[in-house]
Amino acid sequence: MTGKVYIVGAGPGRKDLLTLRAYELIKKADVILHDALIGDVADILRESRAEIINVGKRSGKHRKTQEEINQMLVEYAKQGKIVVRLKGGDPCVFGRGGEEAEVLAINGIPFEFVPGITSAVAVPESVGIPVTHRRYDPAVVFITGRESRERLNWEALARLNATIVVLMGVGRVGEISRLLIKHGKDPNTPVAVIERGLSDKQRVLIVTLEKLPNKVKEEKIKAPAVIVIGGVVELFGVLGGAVKI
Ligand code: SAH
Image (cartoon, rainbow, N blue to C red; front, side, top):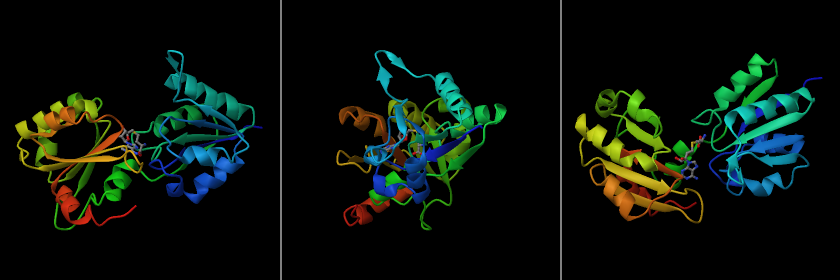
């Protein structure tokens, strides 16, 4: 009998931000394939009886390719196993959850998405930056630093009056800042960069859109970081000192 694959969000890297459903499935699974970015959720994995495979880790020079991971999911399910595919944040927010689900659907393997708390919302929130607030922009847009230069309409984005949340953007801050300003975004728009959010290594950088690239370089900010561009970042001044996690 064919098993089932659960494509599960692990949340932003703290075990107490895991959903109960994710927790139950981790305990029930036969096999768990997880990515690198799961923080202290690793403690929970130790409670599981499942075979645990870190597909985000390099073994030697080799990191598992997406095709290899897809293949593993199909194979384990065909062996009748309950498979948990655990991903950082929410599996479908820049997490390739949809791509893996397509492969499962094509191969006739039953699957389910289990949502997780996305870092795009939780990381800013944890330092006192709500991604929406009625006094500020009436929309929020999530963008990825990868590929976005070619495929995004930067003019529309710059004029949208939206909070812009960038994932995987640390290496692209130069282009992001330049393109938004070129298309009319105010160079003084406040920006927050939150590095390693929700961990004891967290750093928060508050800067303007214009000065973002230099400051990221100066402070040697590294991935993973969430970048928030927009008026809501002002609230860090009011809420940042008061919020306690
Ligand atoms: N599916 C995930 C995002 C995967 S893309 C989610 O919903 O959260 C990976 C990117 O997420 C990183 O490059 C970074 O931009 C962001 N990220 C995830 N966890 C983070 C954390 N704890 N602190 C800062 N950024 C984080």
